[in-house]
Length: 137
Image: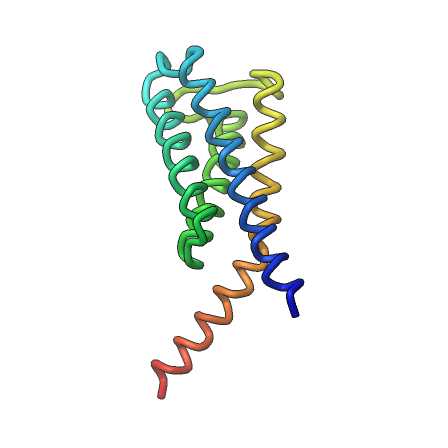
């Protein structure tokens, strides 16, 4: 059955692409002014760097752990976005969808990354069950 490997490759390429777009947006915002925001600027640079690196490794066919790292990078960016609009991040707050259009695009690609990686969560859950069973034996 050829469709399964083709689907897996397609999901891997798409999730790497969405993660790379998130990284690009964070890098762009860093360069265009966020680098001057105390602590937050460094976090944007780290998010961009991690997103690019993990996207490249996922694209190269990285194992489940790397795909889970990709999900973590996307979830972390979404968490930072939510925090910056509610409680603040190291004293930094933003309102609504500013900066526009980067905020909206970033949220969309990070949600897409999490959705594209859903088969990874199933695979990780199966792996965890197998390991738990093996350890109990």
